[in-house]
Length: 118
Length: 107
Picture (cartoon, each protein chain N blue to C red):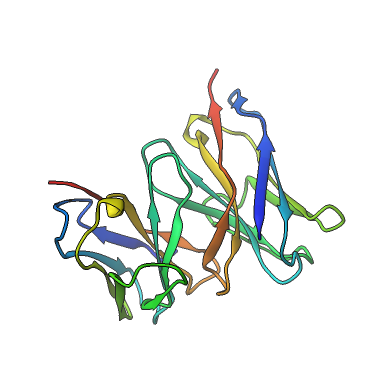
């Protein structure tokens, strides 16, 4: 059974860097793309980007200049860094994995609320 | 970026109703479309992929249709567990995008 467990700082000040990590338990780590998706309070979902085991990435163009997604295959983990955060980056951040279909999310982490406030 | 627009934003319905949600893409995405259900405080759950393929374990009262730029999610005989927010997502391009969501609430 696939489980994704994520962690990271929940409160940041403007201009700081958001950093989250997601550990994967169960299933293959090398056969899928691993994603980050966020959801501002009371709003819809926004895809941030994805990475595979070899480090190949795709990013949301609107966030690309501030985002880095990395992978540590030795630990079956992947991470998100979002630089120079503002209040607009306040959201629940989810790590996620494709299901059986490329591009479709089949598994989600528990979500981490990240609040940006001075 | 491909923009995904859902309608309506909110839908009031009763148990037993047939409910239809529409999702429109700003350009053709063939059938590279998924639907998710999200309940408050929970991560989304995949319902349908490739526009009309039901994910394993999802009740058959859910169905999807469409291709190109217009898609629909239909829930037949709405059940109490179905009151939730529904999102479409395109995966035609490597920059995935979601619709803004449709909340199905009790009439």
